[in-house]
Image 1 (cartoon, rainbow, N blue to C red):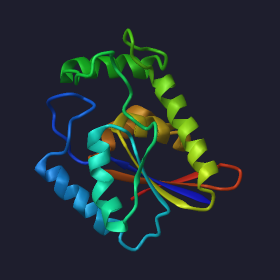
Image 2: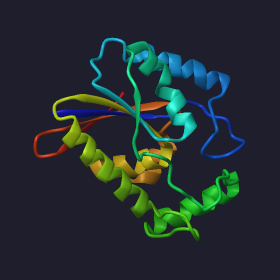
Image 3: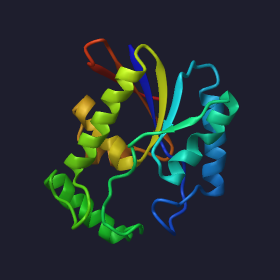
Image 4: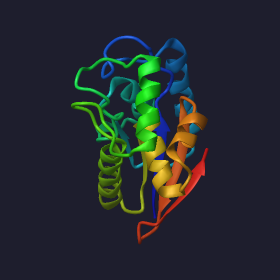
Length: 184
C-alpha cells in the first residue's frame, strides 16, 4: 500500500504574488508543529506544490529529516493568467460558478476539472514511484478538496468549507489503487 499524507499549507500571507506568498508568523509555528506531528511516522518522500506557502509548510519537516522537498504539480488551481491573488469577493464568485460547472474557467485559467486531472495524474505518478511507501505532499485548499471529492464522494465545496490551514488527510492506496481516507 502507498500512503499519501496531504497537508494543506499552513497559514499564509494574504497579500502579494499568489505564487510567492509565504507564511505568517503563526503559519511558521504551524510548520514546526507538523515536524512534531510526523515525528514517529516513517516518511519516504516529502513533496510540495511549487508555491512558496506550501514549500515553506514542509521545509522544516524536510530539514529535520535531512530530506529534499520534491516539487510536484499540486499547486493551487490557476484562476487567472496574472500571478495575483483574487479578491475575496471575486474568488467566492469564481468558486461558486466552478462548483456548478466543473469546466468553468476564467480566460487563461484552469477549471476544477483541469486542476483535478492534474492532481490525479500526479497521484498516480507518486503511487508508481513510491509503491508501499509513505509520502507527504504539501498542497492547497481547493486542489485538496477536489482530490478528496474524487476519493471520498463528499462534495469538494463541503471539503473546502470544512478544511482549515493546515489540515492533514491520509489517503492509503491498495495495489489496485483503491483509496481509503482518514482526516488526521
